[in-house]
Length: 319
Image 1 (cartoon, rainbow, N blue to C red):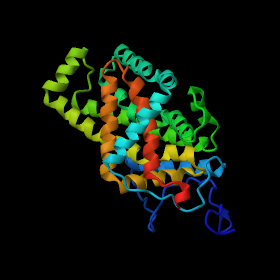
Image 2 (image 1 turned 60 degrees about the vertical axis):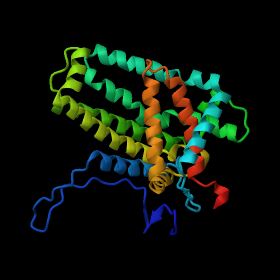
Image 3 (image 1 turned 90 degrees about the vertical axis):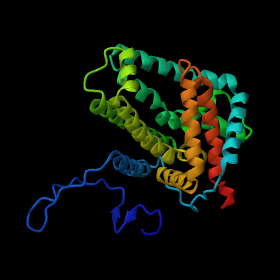
Image 4 (image 1 turned 180 degrees about the vertical axis):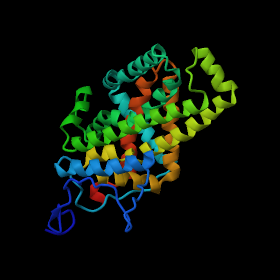
């Protein structure tokens, strides 16, 4: 069988599992060293493999029509997406507050565990890591915005209808990828601490704060942490800003959704950078009063992301 989307190529299934090969040798019998991949290369490789696995069982089929059209947007579009996000939040205020009580509770629990287990250096990485998991945590909010857009009756229970979506397998795989990136970020943050202020743990919170802001090693940790954290955040924003809403909205495959998200980010670098700063700043502000502000910040950003997707990707009727 041939043609685009065919599962058989030259008589062999393109979904057949790969057999692990032994060490490669050159013509003289010497070993050839393999390239050691960095976390970003590894994450993308895992995305490709898990995407193919999901599609092979029929839970995340590749889109077989025209490639989704990506639009260019500006700052005015970001403002409009936020306005629409606030509108959705206002329409379902009680429902989304009930759903999003989880976020401040989770933040407080993480803070308590961090203090109780003498892991003060990981408090900020854990708190900031929420942003890396935000796209998958907001999937239910995307579904509520989608239903409101179509004029369907909606309440908090409809957020869980994502579990019955034909693309739930792909959503779950992409969610696992974000979880993997989150864990890699924690590992990177711990290594940064070890090579700057470590390896000893701080004696107290006040001593830790003093070391961070009054020593050269502390400022080195801040600089390295912000730089590395930015790379992880940029990766997550690039692969998820469109992919999660698109998987809910259309019968597409995981690879198509992620590729569309990457194309949207590449076509709008300025707008995406601004959106990333809006998300990061909002989460910081929402986290300051004992994470309670996240009850409002998370649903507004979640609903707004749905409307941002609508602006970034043309509707199916448009191509």
